[in-house]
Length: 282
Image (tube, rainbow, N blue to C red; front, side, top):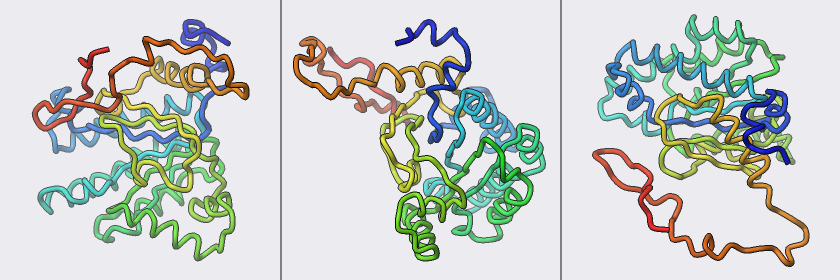
């Protein structure tokens, strides 16, 4: 097995060889990240800055061997923002982020296919469906890398999309259902990189794509993953976590680890945000 130091400093080809083909990437805390960078939220500057950060992170993932990246754009929490005016502004900004002229220029320069799912569940005046149509028309359908931008006003909307696809196609296998829903064959997802609190939902993990998913939760807000962090995560999934063996007799057990009292997922409240509790005994 290759050691971590060699993997971190070695050829990109070694990283690409173990990269997940389909990865779910759902960073959170974009507004917190902007505030930490002295960017006013909400503002046009915030949206422009956040889109640029998103593009940089997605490009890093593709550069390291991922073929399909699924990332959330509009979740029910956004849809239920406190004031209708702010919610409407955020959705208009999202349409620009997804398929504005600047975004299309980036997709075409990088050679990506980009698709936005779930936009039909939003009122047409927010331009999300028009953004999805522009992506269909103006990004390469045969591209090697595909960015999937997920949108849903509720958890029920996710299942409504699946049900409609199944009824339309009469799919009998998961592969047929995936093809019906997404229009192409997409390998099941084998990795999730999310943010903050440890939880999953159909908005984060698309139900049809769930396989044996190795999950990681970063604690840096916003689109902030680095090349080294990607290598560390891919190494952990490919080598450190691969502990299964057909013969489970005579396996060693570390009593100190078995007695550890820390619980992954316990946190503390600081102001209006949750943080992982790093002070647990053990």
